[in-house]
Image (cartoon, rainbow, N blue to C red):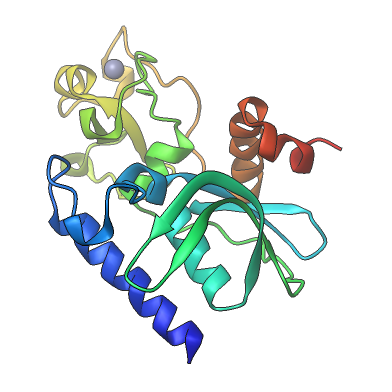
Length: 208
Ligand SMILES: [Zn+2]
């Protein structure tokens, strides 16, 4: 029952955080409410064996903790104040039961493609916030290109315009930084290490 209630609080918080504009924080949650960015902070997920296995958003991590599936190992330093819950935001969580990790790839989505490409235009290497990037079909859709991991890359609007409906070999000065591949566990590990490099709380779980 307690879990159900807490989850409801999270759901409510989520709803509010989407509805309220950044300039108008929901008064209901008081001045120390953890802001939207804290909810979106990446959280390192460890297997029960302490092996790092994934990264998820703080909101998802909180749900796992509230469900009793995981426990917080490291905290972000911010506190979530919702109607009935007051919880430290996690930075690292650990699953309580060991999970075999299947070698499957992540869902194909804009978010995951930008994550795979580290918000870097795969043609000119500029790094931009997600909202300033688009997805480019390497082989344009008009020429039979599919929406697949191998055919979608992060792209800045400039490069996207320049490329238009052309194939790469029809353009002299544009080429891919690297071959696009599915977002695998290997990619996740790489990203975990990149983030972990600058995050003390993550580092001890990522470098043995
Ligand atoms: Zn570009």
